Image (cartoon, rainbow, N blue to C red):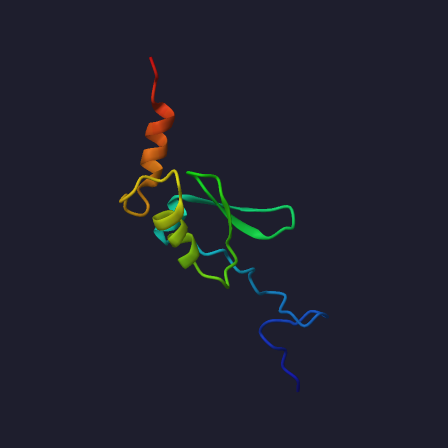
Length: 99
């Protein structure tokens, strides 16, 4: 007597009952100052909210180069500002009223 498995396999070899993977929340503080998106080629990029530079954001490359851009080479980010606090500076700049 054959017993059926608890989850049935479809013709393509995948379980009919498997849930799609959910995207993990980004927890590293650099993501407070970068916006994730895609370029014309369909590659994942991270755009700096300060200087609008597009950096590669491939999951296999890590985030060290993103952190290095924010801390060492972003020309518009205030020097010495702790990671993740750049959003406040940008918001303040937008709300400035010149008389």
